[in-house]
Image (tube, rainbow, N blue to C red):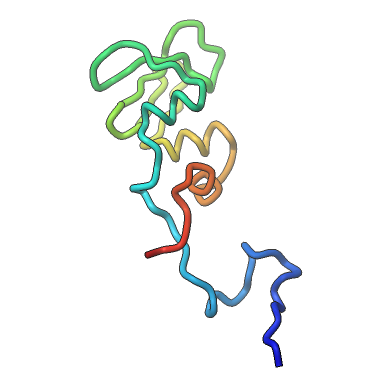
Length: 113
Ligand SMILES: [Zn+2]
């Protein structure tokens, strides 16, 4: 007798019993490099050095108020106070999604090795 797929009706991401499925999770090493991520987001990083300046997308910014740490993707706006520790945090804030959705969108969510 075929086992079928009884959980199909509620969608693959809301399966109630994870037993037969591969473990999925977050892979920080698959996150895009901060420089590439911010370019893809249309945020132009200005200046040189570890901390870059950019126009803040979280408020009506007329001069670059956003500081971005190139190594980690951490960001902080000196005008509106929006801040976060990495590109994931930026993506979540900007697109209004949760951690898992942001990780998926950035290619950092998948089957664990
Ligand atoms: Zn701001």
